[in-house]
Image (cartoon, helix red, strand yellow):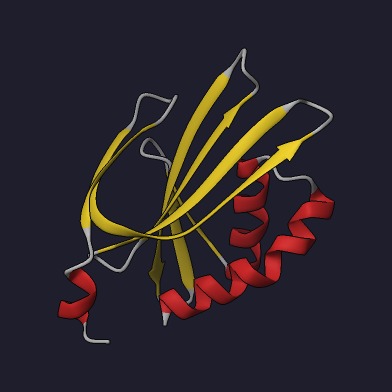
Length: 129
């Protein structure tokens, strides 16, 4: 699919994070998953967007009914490294450290992370080229 055909399905997206950062970008929803943690009675919604600048944006919203948290992270490729930003701070990571960081930042249980890692790796490599 040509880039111009892909861009026709993109829309303006606005995300707000609990750290005060606001993110506006032009992109499209690539994938979405929700899961419920029985121990904490928390529902977490993970969304992956692809931007018109070939970046990936991860949005994580968790709610227990009493408390709601919102985070977002922009991931872009820079040679063999990946840059990840929460809107306030940016770091560069190797692919393995990126996987571990994303799962940790999402609050995903390590057992669940192993289950989700193959799909995440495939998406990251496909999108990064």
